[in-house]
Image: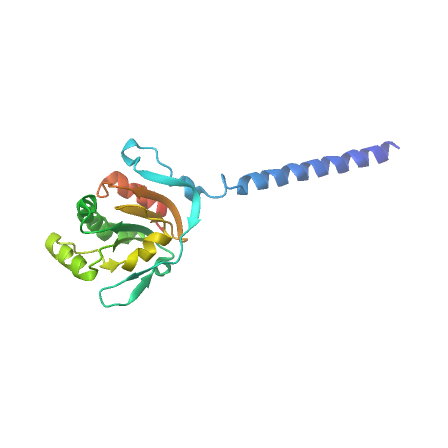
Amino acid sequence: MTKTRLSTITKLSIAATGALALAAVIFMISPEHASDDHAQCTISSETLQTIQVLDKPEPVEDVSFILADGTSKSIRDYLGRGVVLNFWATWCAPCVREMPELDAIKAELVHDGIDVIAVSMDREGHSAIEKFYKDTNILHLEALHDPRSAAGRKLNILGLPTTVIINPKGEEVARISGIHHYDTQETKDYLRRCISNG
């Protein structure tokens, strides 16, 4: 009788231990704890408050942009690298102010596995982009165009400038609506921490 009771207690104890272990695993893989990567994108500095971090990463739709030679480039071409995807136009004063800073960090962050992409929504297309790049000495940013704002609509771009911050998995992790100072050590450190593929 005692042996049977001990056996039952032992079985119950093992079952309880197993249940606790399972609960711990579920807790660890829940959205809040599934990835330390997302925690790297949190904002702790007042100077970075223009960056709006998503509650959880969201897959980015496969949108395309047009190059000067008429060929297209897909956002999927950048999988495996972090992406700072900026939508702008030559008639947008805040956009114009940002472009030299985006050009500067493009050259610097490429070594960290991060691509900076500026996509113009100008109706005139590449003629407007090329003139602006020449006049403002933009050297590193590729000239990309979003005809008829097709990509902008898919990504829910409601105003300019808007920047979508995408991790190497192709997921949006944060967004900047409006002007931001990109060429600062704080912003560069944030982008390296949040979306570098290193």
